[in-house]
Amino acid sequence: MDEKNPSAPACALPATLPTATRSGVGHVRTKLTSGFTIVDNSLLQHGQMSLTAIALSGHIQSLPEGASVSIRALAQRFPEGEVRIAAAMRELERHGYLERRRVRLPNGRVITRTMAYTVPKASPEAAEEPKRRPQPKHRPQPKHRPQSQPAAVVAPGPTSDPDHEPDPDPDPPSGGGAPPPPPSPVREAAPRPPRPARPPVPLPPPAGPAAELLLGLRVQEPRLTLSTRDVERLTPGVDAWFARGATPDAVRRTLTACLPDDLKYPAGILDYRLTSLLPPPLPAAPTPTHLAPHPFQTCDDCDRAFRAPEPGLCRDCREARRGSAA
Image (cartoon, rainbow, N blue to C red; front, side, top):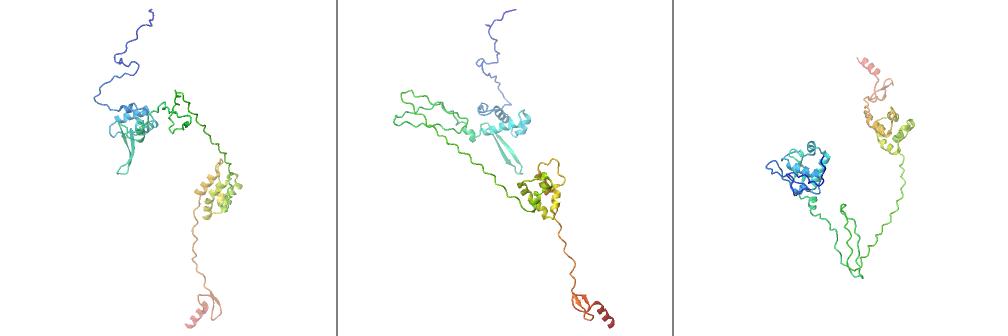
């Protein structure tokens, strides 16, 4: 067998790989005459957006006018889920490459109109990006004042930008001047003592016939022990039963009958029964149809008492006079 020669030259690179970029990416470009979309390099090389958002913007720009770009339609076509596609669309909106508006049609229907921009729209966030420049690593060296009037050093305060890193301290002066005095220590405010906890104010006991009925339910059924707040909440329901003619025994029998074995929330089941089993109101009392009897009168002939609207003769005396007259 032949021996391995480590000094042998490496294999030749394929002819399609450019010789100038052996360690990086190489491009094999083909001139396209149809079926292509022009995309700005500022989008493809955007340093603030994710690859999902960049690819989604390129896909939307390649679609024809009127194509559906809803989150559901995109999730059905690509393996990414709706959550990831929605986050990418919000990211494109923040950087000005996408705009979604709710538009009402003449027939009253509301639709979402999506506008895709090849060049980012002048949104407030997109306009601030070019203005963000990296802070200089070293601050200019301040001129030293005479020793009689030393310059006051102000400690840098916290910045509002959480991603901003504080600049390093400037290099010490190369001259023979004295270094600036150290900043004065900041006095921390003493923590305030905790306020004493206030005792809870006891609620007044509920009163009235409805409250007494609810409070007495635990005598018949210990599981129906209610709190003061529950009694105050259920009292109007019991009053509604009383207003419709229900007696306390009928209300008590309705609330305590056939309770479940695993009773956990007694106030809830009582509230449900007071609401769903509320009886209808009683019918109105009928008006009396009989008339009051006539007063007693005394007969003029026989002094007999009889009822009549006016004084005169009784029935027998009236018939006797009719017979004598005939």
